[in-house]
Length: 615
Image (cartoon, rainbow, N blue to C red; front, side, top):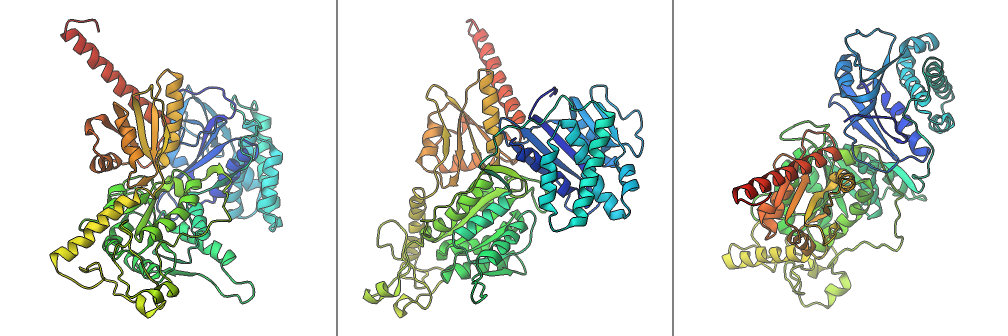
């Protein structure tokens, strides 16, 4: 895609080396746009090692507020010589490449349709700063200054951000201001500033924040009343527990006694972590574990135990590329079926699909209510794009009247009035039995077992007694349909073509629909928020002739789940699949839909000719 002069509509990609401290400089640049009132999103493409391999950070500036990856690069900061050739190739025609001209580049590494801008960043920093570490770090800050001049970014905004970041570190603050000015002054003196791309103040970020999904999910768990977290570190979910621990240290410590009202355990593996969460849930605590695909694989047996023994638990699966180790620092949506049917036997799990950090926060609370209301494990599936990248979302608002929904729990007073209590007896005809907490009352005692048990909680190998329990669990699944969040739907009864999608595909689909509508193609849209699917999902499918199922995996897992769980005709569900590990972009969706519709028109013309009628 070619590029051209645009205000508040461009993408910057910064190519660097992992471990050089560029993250803070990149964040400074991104948040400067945000503080100028311009919607922005940051995407980090980083390697799965600690230091030395190439890394890229992509900043999309969108005055229209689009949050998906743009699918093009307008301005490339090529700070890594090893990837220079690739970086140059990735720039859109009409774009710009900025590089460190301290070291010369071969003439052949130019493009006639790309403007090359050389700035001697390393030389300037070597001359100005005395230590090796400062020279490396300040070179990153210097390129922020150069970009500020080239794009007309408000220097007062950058200066204020620096002051806030380094308020307690006077020496670092002074050096950062010097480095910013080095880059800014050089660009102003040697190039026509600004470029055709400019950042102009608008007012579209008020009442918004920048946050990543892992932090938002952890905050949701705190607000939901979670007090127990057990996990084994795994990319890209570890920062969920890091954030939860930080919030607990701030909000779950008694000011008078210093007592910590939470328990966080780093287990020896994912199996142990899942067991700890189930134990805590059985005891009445709200407990969760963050993990990713390999962790789900290891937790599967205990997930089946939680389903059959009916113990509340919450899992936050931040999906990454598979199979096996796959690409741990790339994004995907390939755990859908693994989570839906995790464990052996007839097992179904409630799933939630947030589309942004905002929904990670709210669904983080919803997951705990569902787990206790339904007495079952609930899995929230985010992905690396949502979990670890910087998103602009509306300010998070919490209802102070919220009270945790503990579900059907009998307290001591209720148990005292009962003649007897039977753990797995369906007394309300909704397939959800009552439960008790350990030590509440002698009448509330029961055996928790993953082996065959009857409705009274007793061990059994009687075929009829066993079947009664698993049939009730199937009916409980039907009950769950009325509790899970319904889909988000954009619908016109004049349109018979639609898109169905989930999670982080949402931004790309919204943008694709807008751009298709501009060209005269209207498409309805449904974003599924949960599994099991409620009746609205089946009704939406029934109302359309052709439906594109957009998802980020190879094997069309959402489409497969829709076919398995509804009575839809599979022929009307066309998979549009993206699974290269990069966040999805609108252009890929648009091109796939246009290609399919072009094929349909071609077939229609051929059919018309065969019948001897006008095409």
